[in-house]
Amino acid sequence: DGGITQSPKYLFRKEGQNVTLSCEQNLNHDAMYWYRQDPGQGLRLIYYSQIVNDFQKGDIAEGYSVSREKKESFPLTVTSAQKNPTAFYLCASRHGTGFTNEKLFFGSGTQLSVL
Amino acid sequence: AQSVTQPDIHITVSEGASLELRCNYSYGATPYLFWYVQSPGQGLQLLLKYFSGDTLVQGIKGFEAEFKRSQSSFNLRKPSVHWSDAAEYFCAVRNAGGTSYGKLTFGQGTILTVHP
Image (spheres, chains in turn red, cyan):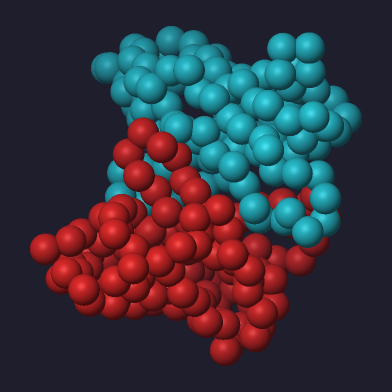
């Protein structure tokens, strides 16, 4: 089945540690996105990539980094500079352009907590 | 910058009752508007979207939404709620420009509880 796979489902970070969240898609989608979800705040865009080897900062990029070396993969690293990393992280992808393709496909998310 | 407000944090309805979830947006031009639904611990699924044309749009699972420019609203409705509709619902907006694909601004979400 085609879809977006996020791993791990739960992740714990120690003080001063960098952690990487995995996002893989087999939908052949060009664009991929990382959103952060906090209770009562909706989702906020961290980074996005419209094409391989290119990515852009979203609204809350500080303390995060990404790479897009392959079309299928868009990993997110939460660095030690992110002082409040506890949140639910959602990866999404989109195919093509035009209103017909105005639909984000989401993974099942990774819950990151600080030890 | 655009913004989205969902005034109701939590709504409880009885199964079979009608439902309306409110969404107000702030944006200068005609926005692209969306409703997504999220089951606990899961990702989001698109219910419906609006850009132009008929202001009443139909979506999946029997949902519909009406765009009212004069009220800056895009409320979600369903005539008869099923227990499986219990979830969190998000309204979202994005700029109309081509570089804004996928760059959504989400509301805070409304949690729907359905009583049998």
